[in-house]
Image (cartoon, rainbow, N blue to C red):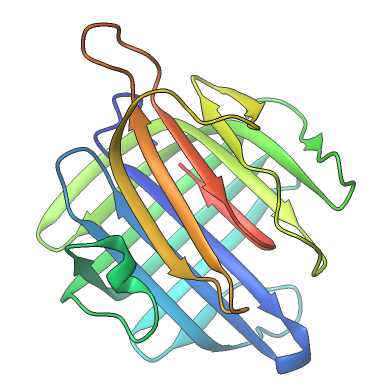
Length: 219
């Protein structure tokens, strides 16, 4: 996420081993802009330890350069520009839009185990390029990388800002600057809200998320 909340990118991988399928979700959102969503649920499980995904209209790769420290993310796909983020649910309605990512992620500190002991959360910095339609953005900002396994209940909502992570039991205070929603491939809705503080009392940008399970990269 850019530090000024002008642009945020969410990438989610959901592995469904009993169906031999993966779901891929990417959303680009920000203040004063329409949400662009890439949602594909019918991706064959990659072979070996690779996370390179290929399906009709999408190529995505996720390379662990250094465990718990450094990742590279790539994407070439067509998504949908939507007037309302809920339009990305189900069959999806919107304007076909090319989306590309070439982003590196580096953790600032060792990951923190979730209270449920079935995953972890890492805080760091992301930098690289984001392409949306004819737009080209060189980005650098705070990010969070969440990894969870299993099929249990939803994670407790959490928020992140200014390079730190906070367990979120209460609502974030601020103005909504962007929102994205998608079916996560398991029948549950995954929702993200980007908010900023009031102009008269600026506060850090916050990207709050509720997600089910899988691998999630937030920048």
